[in-house]
Length: 589
Image (cartoon, rainbow, N blue to C red):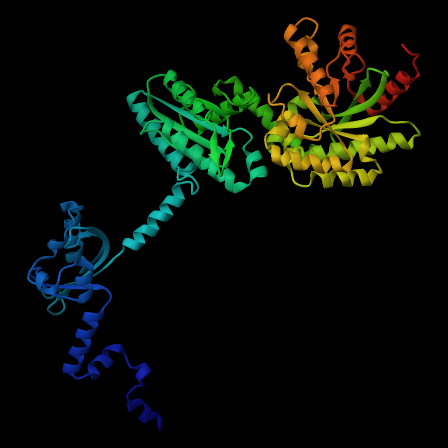
């Protein structure tokens, strides 16, 4: 075919313009196809005349609205009005339609059965020729209820906590900002309660996240029952909750609700057949005294919460300006603590434990100290609680065990007869999987026999989860380690665990030993612990011995061992060796 022939030939079907293809159909066939396309279109179609009365609808219209064609023809589209839009909405729609010839948007309509539904509507104007008068209006629309469900779900996820359904931080800050604006107009008070669960990570670590999630859900439910309808309970994430109290008359109103929240934690919580006990530290900040903005109130409530934790947890504290300095100090300490191990800032001090029958130093308790680069030597009661909360205690505790084994091996290598070594294991370290394996590696690394090491644990560490504790203690005991219960008498009152756990020694807490000569209760408790230990075949160690008369009393009542400043305060390894050498060389008493 020549170039001229190709120019005169009709285009191939796949190149034929759509309008030209349509014109190739005979008129009767073309009308049949268009009618079929109209009827089978998945979009609802409604055609009205210039008087806005319905002249045609398709089957999708009937399925969506419930109106058959003969019920709709001749009526106006207003038959579908939901009544949810005001006249201004429809006026704006018609103004746009006449101005540009089309309108698109979301609108609520009503079906024949009276139910409302959202739809997406496209309306176009048909004119008699270009610029001519309106002849028809053609509307295409579809039900977007499913879209609205998805949108609502997305909105819910954007503004709510997926676990508890409570508002998240984004929605909380929005509501708090509005509450403050309203309070300023009405000269009312707004309070923010910052709530942090105590030791919640222990639940996740020991019982699993599924149990932890159910516990959080139950706590969220309880918090909602403590507040009024206009108040907001939100979850920031983890174990942190915030309550916004609106329209308060005075600080006592906030205190009343805070106490109600605090009491809600007193009731035990049942999760998967387990009875759990949760406590919370609560910080309270009140507008306008404690801040004008949402950010300031939140920050000050958070600061007050840390003060509640510093006061022993499980209490409420109102914000006071001095707290900011304390929290700042704590945060600085926390940030420095995270790097203390890698910077080799920790040291072990040693305190002797003496057998009261033979007067021999039979054990050295290894006690950690932190030599802060700016603050000097920091005692453990300042940094151990922070290490527990942040999780650093696991790595620090493992370092203590390894360092104690290293020092014990070094003393033996120098030809001396070292005493047993006692190391403290924190509750969090105790529950961390693989404790026995990590201890075994330290023993093997330094060539130390397990029988030369005592592991000291508090009652609370053992009794938080007794079944798990029994398994871990069984592994430690099978290695040959000694098991010592530290600070005995300050934790759980139940003594049943003394029969079931493989314990070797009890240490009477120093708080009882300190006043045993002047306080009848402390004296009776000390005597009871000594008798109980001996009846169970356990050794008993008295901590905090400082005076000869205390020592005489303990010897007279057959206490096995003693530890305290009477013999020596905790000292570095070199000084401890000097003490040990002098103690062994001194003439018998």
